[in-house]
Amino acid sequence: MAKTLLQDLVSHCDRLLRTREIPDYDKAANGLQAANDGTVTRIAAAVDASLATVRLAVEAGADLLIVHHGLFWGQTQPWTGPRLELIRLLVQNNLAVYSSHLPLDAHPKLGNNSLLCAALGFKSPKPYHTYKGFPIGLQAAQSIQRDELVRRLDLALEAPEGRSVVRLIPGGPGRCKKIGIVTGGAGSELHQAAEVGLDTLITGEGPHWTYSMAEELGLNVLYGGHYATETFGVKALAGHLSKKYHVPWTFLDHPTGL
Image (cartoon, rainbow, N blue to C red; front, top):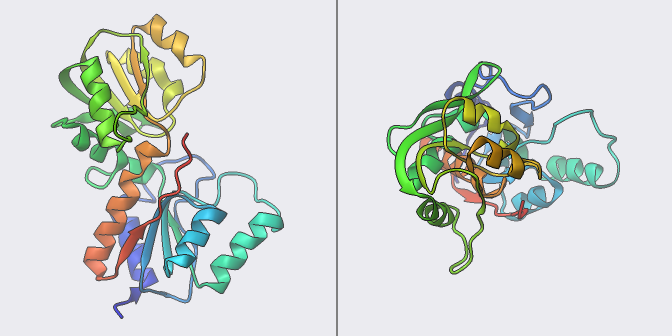
């Protein structure tokens, strides 16, 4: 059975993703969030670290879980109920957890935004959408009919045949020419899109009031789902690690529908 040292893998990820350099939400805690006995023989990847995905990782025989949304996002929770069960499963099954949020979004090859651009057929995208002064999203100069863009996004997100998963706010022109891509929950950042001259924004989700705002700003908005737009990065990172360290990996699909 092939195996590698957890610390070697973590150090590589931290360098590759520039974990210490790229700013994130104060409580995101990027990097290794839970350790194991120090070795990795099988990697699992999931969008979210939760009791459900930890159970799936245990079933898959993984000893490292790579996630985009980690275990920590705010005030530490009491170790009771489901939280206690999650921690117990990690310890009893020797399962480590590595999380990368905005650093993974921003990576030029393995990132959610760059991979979604590639899936849509966009070439040579440029940086756009900053967080604390650091570019996270991308923009592309691409002339495409709005309906065709919706179709491409459905294909990229592997929507069921005959059913669209994209929620469209048709606030902008019927032909899109300057398109922003920010996976996840960037719907509330429409003003930033308008300020740089975009006519279309692709993201995962946004608040109800963004419909009226998009109309007022003259902006098309395509919501593909927070979960669905952020499956790309963890798959790519796990695949990269599998190839480099010769350990198998699997993706744990636990869609939220959001």
